[in-house]
Length: 96
Image (cartoon, rainbow, N blue to C red; front, top):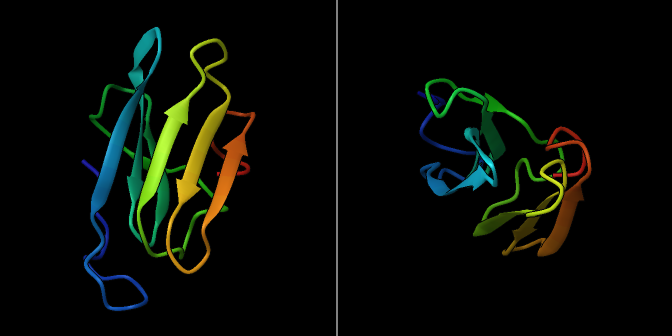
């Protein structure tokens, strides 16, 4: 289970916005959290860890997508005060 403080820097309740599974390997999951970034699980959701650097501290809706042909390529978009499109070529740690 992923457990972090319930409020972010703006006083909003942090919430999981989306969970996506890696095509062909459902043990690897990604989730987007408001004002936190991207979290990742490599054991089908039993444990989670923070897996992003670029999306942290951005409030607003986040969407994730994983390339069906290259599971190391992850796309993330953020909506809010800094609407951007992010991508990672190393399964999450850099870029998203």
